[in-house]
Image 1: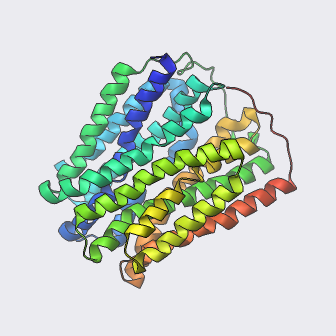
Image 2: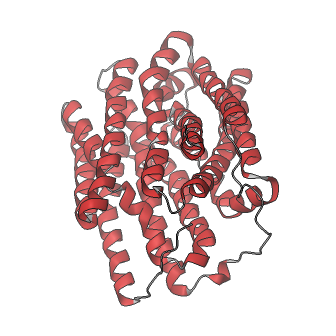
Length: 394
């Protein structure tokens, strides 16, 4: 196999463990409510906590790889993920969950930032769109595997065993990268160069922040859906394993719709339609889910939600000058992590205050719909401040 495709295969498989671990809390949430007596706000906090370190680490993440080497930072990230997954088994309490989740989240941030850079190193100027689409789908694949198996494992063996399974997966990913990934020539060998937010023009900073807010809202709403839809369905009388199968099916459909959306955007340039249909249908599906049999809304959600992912991820490149992409992507991912970390706890707080198992799901549906006017604002701001961006391979 060609070295770059082998590198993509290794990195993609290793990143599956990140989605697997992220979704573990949502998969076993009903068990935590039952066994530890935690509140819905606590569940939301734990879901968001996995992404919280990214608010601090997204900007300097690239510099860490430049200083210590990309592969070394990825291995460190997987080691932290393995340790974070194992900790709740050693300290089976809410405090153990918080500590383990935070530790694993730090490792996951390193994976997100460094692996994206590594894939770009291998594919810049050659099949980069295809490579990034494959790489991006690793996360929902991991979520889907988690939904299919961790709920059942938690029911049969206990929630600590389910979390320890994520530790084993991260350790396996560490071994795979250590043995199977060959360092790229650009791995940590770039000359040190001071990067500052001041390098961004006001136009770039505003537009990449709006794009980041779109991606942060998207990811936060998805986190709420994955964490609280299982609670809603269990409250409606479904078994945890059955819920995992239903939500897992929707997640696998996201994998399909993500690839479909990328093909549509590349061949027919229907970005506006993908954003409108994807977020409109996904939002409507969640608003209907509490009042309908779950199968149809969840299928519709999965088929629609992945459609705009490629469009969203292309927004920063459309507004950043080539020499500003590093710091600009740091800003973009910082907003993503803010949304990922902040919105699930808000959903849990609303559910505790309002009551009922559907409040957080309604909130997630409204968030998906709110992306449509955010995208309209992005387009309007970009049209008012036209500045050509010259694309450069690599």
